Length: 312
Image (cartoon, rainbow, N blue to C red; front, side, top):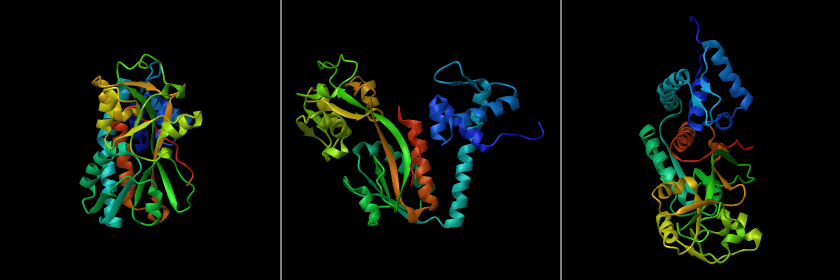
């Protein structure tokens, strides 16, 4: 074959398909339409004369030919990313400051590994977390007390750019022998008479409260704790019920500590975004941190989904 049609975008497509298991999720992750992604696959399959994915199976499974290209992607894409980092250092310098503010307690579960990975690539960037929980992390950006904020919903603010991280499902947590544990899902009325165990944050930062319970006229008694593991222990001992991201509680579910149920007929789904200032657009280390967060999150967090890029 004198000329290869294989491009980096094709390798990224194979990687996204392998990670997500379906065309729709892979297309969202790559900011492509499903038809554009399918066209990429068809072009490759026509050129090489073999199928790359088994379309009869769900989730999608790569064929041996697809696995070979996936192996190439896993070898080449990290090298490309590293080369691009080095070029960015040459062009823009290595030093800088990246202070991160968060409005969710469970964010630290995926944020800390991303920070550790980032430090290895950008040792001259001063990386720090703005201490404490922040009800207004965007305000910290605007007053330059933070450089990146992890938020649950974009706000209308012309000076701020929002970068999609991932979507996830909130699940209700109960003791394994709780009377409600046999239900297929929990509705708002099921929380009446229950003690709700939450983090000590305002109601508008608790999806279960402001999206499900308050609209139904319910405001059950609360018990708060700063620690996820303490919340799990309280639920397991039937001191109350809680709602947490599925990816955050999956290890506890696998060990049989607590029982999880979906909330509402379609589940309670939430989103996370990274907010930055528009005047920081183009900072190489900031862009690379966002790439690192997404890649590690999709590689390690169970059940998360890609998000569309919001209008900025």
